[in-house]
Length: 179
Image (cartoon, rainbow, N blue to C red; front, side):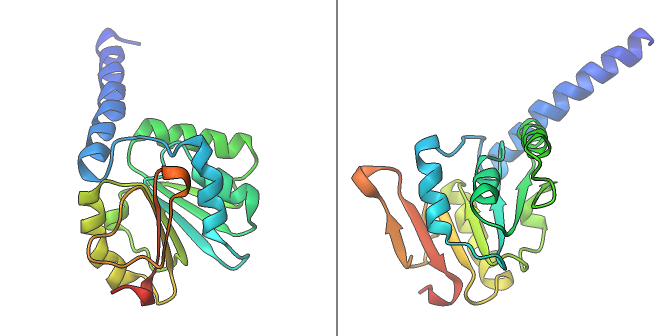
């Protein structure tokens, strides 16, 4: 391998890892995983059925995808634009044998149609939630449930807020039930 090729690969890898992390942080949210103690709350609140298709927007290292797949027999799809968390989740899904049930997409969910989802989970910044509100309204079918960890959807009224013992709130919305 030539010296130029080696340095090109090194710098390309650095740009891929740090560039995509910066893009994700500016576009929707920096990688900050859901607290382990709150994963069970998210899973329980999802109330998925076998026919559900659950999307995780900004799925990070895949912890929510994997937890949903372990607890429900439905299709689970994650979107992640930061390469390192994407790669980690892809490896975890393969190693756990969940690749038939869980799909992880290296893609920007703002540029993808979310219309197949029956449940959407997100842990994104307030700015991203504001930007998603019209996309949800346009693309999600009536009855679709949205579970938002930590931040509300501006202008929408949740059907429930789960916040036991002053922990991080989880907002639950139903597309046809918003204000």
